[in-house]
Length: 379
Image 1 (tube, helix red, strand yellow):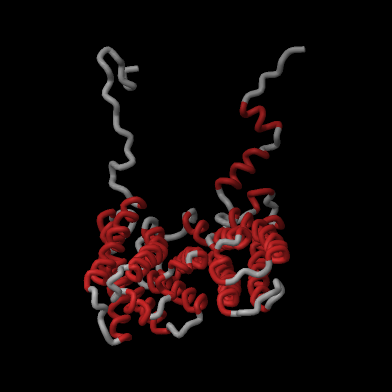
Image 2: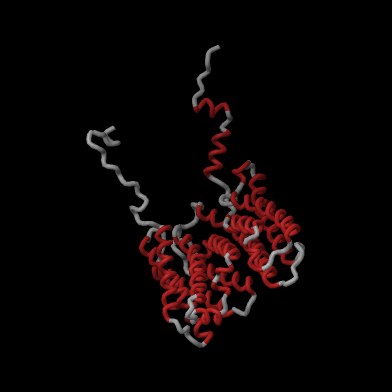
């Protein structure tokens, strides 16, 4: 029997164009849309609120001996609502005729994986508490099941951000309204990460504690404050740099991101630090004005670097100024509180350069051909 030649066109014809349909769907994935992403953010706020109340309970309720608490109910109900919404987004695409991965809206595949991971981690958390009891204080930050839960939550929260990063309909210089789902998405995710790093979050310190630490000559207190500032500074700055790496920052973006961090710090400690929350919001306004002046963006590399260096100086300059006015005195060791914002600025500059390197930083250097060796062009 003679062999039948199979060309690409012959194969495509005999498969009824199924591959063409699959590739077309992969190239043009469905979108949750602006309203859909806002609803994802709304459900994420519920989930984040449940997480923060649960963390507060672990830190502040002395006799927490059961898994079934009002705070866990807030956390898991927020998850169920968010998971149901993501499932509904996929179901809508399935009803429209899409199949498999092509039915998952752009940016939501990892969010769907986060939903599955949360279910597994939640069951593991119940088992863990049954065997080892209920953790308190810093123990909750290193529980393996809690780490998995936070990872799952971050994957869910960042779905609108991933959608925005691949959305061709998003303007090259979007307004704050248009960029709001992406900004809140990355702010929620980073604030969730800071839940695990609350032992290194400067925002949970009261003004009196900060001034006292910066007045100690043994340097132990100042070292703690400096370390906390470095970690908190990177957590607050990186979301802005990530956004500015893709779009020019619209006015108000920093205030939105900083407000989320202020709320997170208030919820974790539940101490009388409302002045700290107001200070962080004020610092966000200052960083917004800096961004308005510098106009950092993907096509403005030097201004992007300058923003990475100056935003921490503005942030912690305002933070220290309000803190000192609130306490009514300046720390006695001047080098500590004058030098720390500069250190934060230098680290901000380093991360800005890593996120948006120089034009030739990633270019592959051309190798000079050895004598008698032909170049690629000649070959």
